[in-house]
Amino acid sequence: MMISTLPLISRISTPCKYLAAPGPDRKCLMSLLAEALHVPDHGRLRPWRFILIEGEARVRIGQLLFERVQRAVPDASAARLEKERTRFAFAPCIVAVVLNPVKGHKVPEIEQVLSGGAVCMNLLHAAHQAGFGAQWLTGFAAYDRDVLAAVGVAPTESLLGYIHIGTRTETPSERDRPDPLALLTIAAP
Ligand SMILES: Cc1cc2nc3c(=O)[nH]c(=O)nc-3n(C[C@H](O)[C@H](O)[C@H](O)COP(=O)(O)O)c2cc1C
Image (cartoon, rainbow, N blue to C red; front, side, top):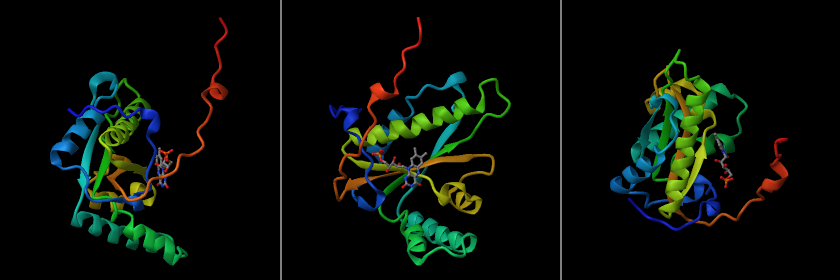
């Protein structure tokens, strides 16, 4: 397992267009995924899984995404269509985090979704600590059933996020972050 001293507060998303090869090799990716899976999981349901999108799969899915948006959004601009076509073309490693919910369980589905969100966040942190840039994206590609089928997501599953991982070609500047004090209320004794 990799040991890093990078503080989590230094994590920042890198827009996927600024992510390039090299990405994590298989061994490194397995470490990142193992770290991502260190999440609270009420009922030990393990309601999540991963699909790795790399190489030519990125081109195939990008082309389908282009065609689906073109059909579904007739007034989509050329720039929007081009953005969709190239969305998966930058980062060498894209991990689709998939929710496979256990229906009718006493652990409500919202808790299973939250656990899956924690997997996504852990993966961003793991990538950061390993020195990679990363971004959590959804958009049309996360909700269109034709695109999801092409990725390998079953009709009973949901896509929680595409986590794009790679080497930064530009360093993003820090964003304005909320002051925790402004968001904190102390409950009455
Ligand atoms: C569930 C989820 C979905 C997101 N989907 C998109 C998206 O489709 N497009 C986008 O530009 N940003 C999206 N974002 C925002 C980026 O992942 C990221 O938060 C943003 O670039 C700000 O970076 P930060 O992580 O440094 O705050 C999404 C965030 C979350 C939590």
